[in-house]
Length: 226
Image 1: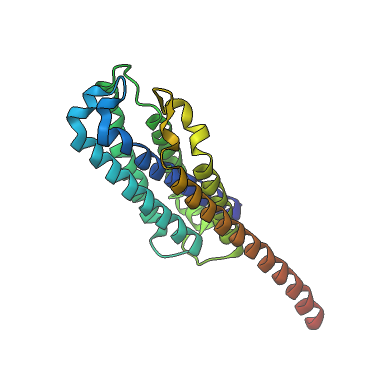
Image 2: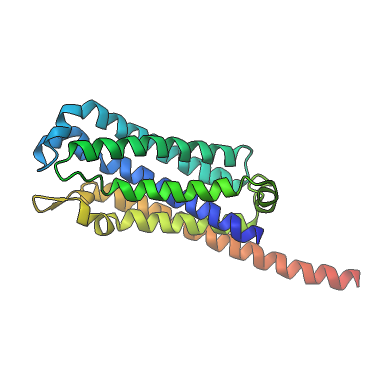
């Protein structure tokens, strides 16, 4: 049960961090020149605020990725750092949502809503992990093991797929004047996604080979002791 909960925690933290980072990058176009997009003209008056949103979410996304890596490696304070990222992202995200709904003509704050909801869900999961018995069972800071490495690998693979497919799943809410703004940083997203996918696949294979090696050694030790 503990391994399953660790897997879920690492996976959700990694995916949420990726969404936070992508949200920050995705807000860049509006933050730099909102006046050219229909229904967002009012945002241009608050350009400085949206630039801060971009910087904040990019920073939180990077912090979240670091926290995820720390969870995989079983580093001290990894759980605490994850909570800090989630709480800060929720606060800034909620303010960002309120601002967008007030300034946009259609009163919408999509697709940011989805990112904030993902932060809320992950935060709830991590708050549940704070209960002493569950926290002991999960053991985020008990050092690295094959289960954590596999979880990290799977998380990296899914994060890579998010980066590689961002123009498809984010496209419907990012089309202005027939242009898909979610594909604005196409080359950067493809390179980043490809690296994440390859690294994740490598971690997953490493964890599988390590587990197989351990399973081979244990029967040999049992036969010797018998």
